[in-house]
Image: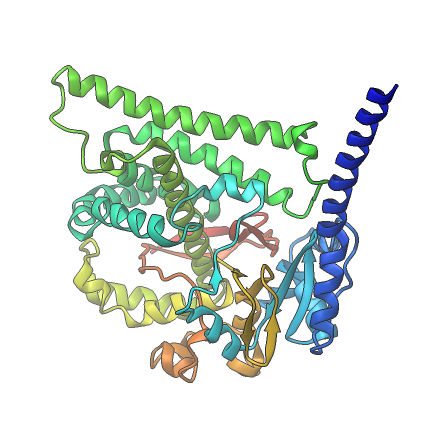
Length: 484
């Protein structure tokens, strides 16, 4: 009986310890952070037990999806209320700096560009990349996007060796061939609807698979397709939080599918490497090649870099190509200006590096596209230790949220015409357009492209930008091609 009592006492202490830790994480610490920020004049939606602000965010996004379900007569570029309705709503209530919650994790949104510059010019390594949630972690892995310190430096060096300038120059013919194949296919679609996002997904999958996997590009294409499926699963579950540790006991169907995809991606990379090793041993090839798989790094690092390359090569590039042609389909005058400039520089020749650098009108158009429809709409950093940012004293482990889309659509920075497509605002360069405010324009860069058709927006187009890793059109972008 005494032994049974001893076991019950130990069990009670164990459960008490677990409950204390859970309460500290799920209640005491969030309330303490909320009070500390409120004492400095920083408010926001109040913390809700376990879920934080995620249920409200999910509901606001769901409401937008329900309302935007038909073609629009007048397409507006005022997309913040559509893509991030929670930021749009909370900014009106709490101002440009406020606290909100991803579960028990505190996030401080800062849209003041002076504070943004201070945080991003982080010489003391106080603001670091955070640990991403499970589904997002499966997409990013420990690649260049999510790592810090020595590992980031090593991976950056390896990526440079595989994709330095000379290597990429050798890949240009394959890239040009892929574009010619696209244009040839479009000849059969003249005066018909073409869904640009799907078209660019196909061609970019081809190009980046050849670039990353060389002779194994068909298998590489399958890997990128699986990463695309993983991205969609992660996106739809981003604001659906569960109790800590519950996934170890019971997994949802999406969790089971994402686990299978992650394993399949790893197995596919191992399969490609195994084939190359067999060919090398049989004397069919002289080395592992100078592509992605020729870097000879650990399998974990290789899988992570495949994920990074998918994010940078497929998601973001596809986003910008699609939105650029979407804007040109609406604004025919700029479409004509861009076509004339490309014709003047290249004539009937394929694009080359020297000529691309002369495309000033195209550069203006792309910069304005990046402003209105940036592929990456948020940057987040974790506060490593207690620090002062501006006049605010920030506790350790709070997350800084830099809302790129909101900053790009801020009339205080860009003027009353902020929601209009006006490439001429970049006619004298980015510095002039932003009044030398480096934190006012924060997208990924992109080289220009050319086209041999005129195109108009389909009357059936539904304007619903959404975030699935990068910002993309929920219902695609349908245009009608007209041969020149």
